[in-house]
Image (cartoon, rainbow, N blue to C red):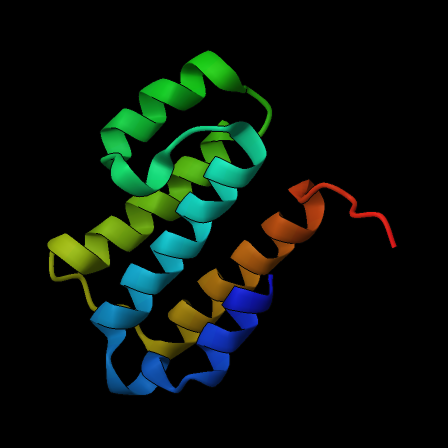
Length: 105
């Protein structure tokens, strides 16, 4: 979650939407790796979908929703409005909050 907050503070949301979404996707892929043991950073979205089918069912749909959204910006030239990007970022924060494992103090 720290990486996501750092990304928000970076200013990339206004200056480089493409880079912002590459980093957003990377943060989620690192979360997948850390929580499910799937090497998502080196995988395509399709490969991640297949791996998630074998690993989890509970939040697979939410994960894929975010990955496909980021892919649409990164590879299909979709240009969401700033308020949409901020809303998606907040949704991802809530996702992390719900599904991140509790860490010992």
